[in-house]
Length: 318
Ligand code: A2P
Image (cartoon, rainbow, N blue to C red; front, top):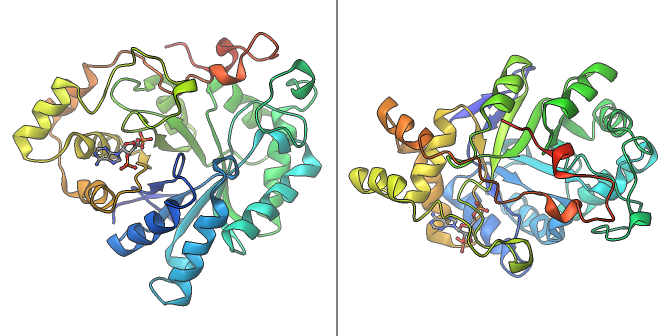
């Protein structure tokens, strides 16, 4: 398995199984199929509301000697409602309990957006904290403490732009080791990728296939399709592989880990098999040429009129 390397030499398998949108009732089997197929990296989050079932699958795999704990790389994410210093470790403890693990390989701040404790998705102004109520550097301090006490091996962030990464770098002692961001040929994130690489921050690409299984409430009717894009399909047809495999190979060629979600046995295997798909310079250029700076996950669910956050706060302008 191809890997990326952390600062201490630990390795991250480049392809992981995504579990966002995988329903309870489906994710147990998906995790077991993935491990059986050879995946050694599983991406989770408390807000996906399926960590208990992922935990049940992991437990089954360990008890039946399919794989040892130390052979798997497990990531999870701190939800927005646990950003205060005193809440971070408690949230991690719940995730560890749900996943039936005694440590995580990687723990990420899921979003640079803070909610009051107990809030799932903030709607009213009262349900939000602002950056001055709970500075990101405070949340990061909580993450550093989790690292200190050995409950996690690595810490990082997700959905952070350059200015938010700088806020942490300037105010804390540990530089994040990972930024998990939306990334695919429609959204190449060159400026942010360049900044992360300069600072030794690894990257993971989410929504690599365009996340077309998002709920209708967070989907635009006219959104473009990666899997049906003619440039991507032409390259795929030429090689006799699928569009999804080209998309997964694209991030690998940029040295970025990738976490395609699937709950289908064949597609889980097919996505991992994209490790064998090689793209030449001309093909990478064609894929880069279809960039349109399009976000499938634009964060607008955090930026309602009642919210103290705006899309301008969240994203890089390229
Ligand atoms: P399914 O879970 O039924 O396989 P993303 O990772 O960008 O969020 O995309 C996930 C979506 O892409 C899901 O709808 C998933 O469906 C689908 N998907 C996953 N792998 C493939 C594949 N190899 N070919 C086509 N669609 C795929």
